[in-house]
Amino acid sequence: MNTTKFALITLAVGAAVMAFAHWYNVDYLFFASYTILQFIVLATAWNILGGYCGYVNFGSAAFFAMGAYSSVALHKFDTLIDHWFSGSFAALLHGVFPLSIPALIVFGAIVSGIAGLGTGYLTLRLRGSFFAIATLALAVVLQTLVVNWEYVGGSRGAYIIRPESIEFAGITVNYIEYLFGLMLLLAMISLVAARAIERSQLGFGFATIRDDELAAEACGVPTLRVKLIATTISGAFMGMAGAPFPYYIGYLQPSSAFGLEYAVNSIAMPMIGGTTSWVGPLVGAILLGSAQQYATVSISSEVNLLIVGLMLVAFVIIAPNGLVGLVQGWRRAWRKP
Image 1 (cartoon, rainbow, N blue to C red):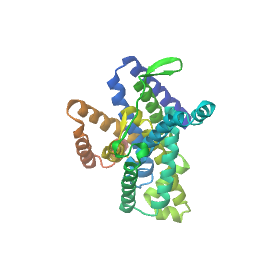
Image 2 (image 1 turned 30 degrees about the vertical axis):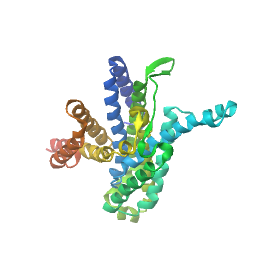
Image 3 (image 1 turned 90 degrees about the vertical axis):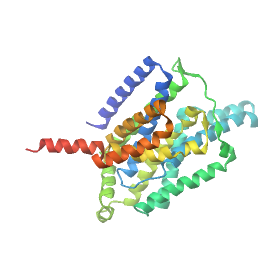
Image 4 (image 1 turned 180 degrees about the vertical axis):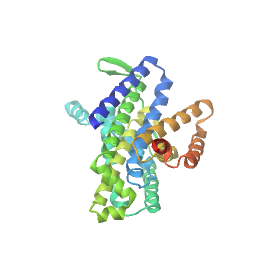
């Protein structure tokens, strides 16, 4: 199946999901599904670098937070325009810096993508656990900077007052439903992009680096350039996932944006589903995200990390290559005469 056909099928499935959610029209469904879709984007983004290239990134929360705080920075700038300027010049600035969620998503992707590129230049000459520790250090440094940056709220955090509804295509839509629709679109884009990369020449370059980087260099693969592309794409998608987050949560503080659950879930979900295919992060995010949302309602959100740990240990024992690898193993065994 070519990429265009897969994209059309994905779009049809997404439209069906959106139609069902709009018909069901329960706020909790939008809130819970938004979180699961957000994790699909994060897990897919992590897998581009960690699964396809084999470079484990512990700093997922940093790129997610960059997207979130870029939205906060632009939101505050938009509110200050009317205080600093007036008349046609203020209207011009509002036009140049439109405060819409799609514009914020694009801005968050650019900021996090550039950060991913810069991080790659600084850390990609490291390998294995050294690279993983370097990405974790990035998250710590960035959180320290945000805590001391008063413009975006500092340690106090920042409030984002979202409207109750929004006019979209001439229809009044509940705002959380609007955010759900945008995150559904981002999830579809990330899955289509991951599948296209996996089956492209770039994806084959990622796979050679993952299997044997020295052999890839000997065969003429420009390993540093390929890895920089991976860090840039991965960071951009994580920033896209984080950009709508302040409007979803309403109050953003460093401990929520840089939460351990984002770093842990971004790693655990692809490992549970399988890291060698775009399907793995999707399956892992749906399975683990649904379990966490159920636990949040029935028990407490405090047990979410416990669920991650238990499921990760179980799947490492039962299916070391993830659910996708387990199914592929069964299919190979079934086909043997």
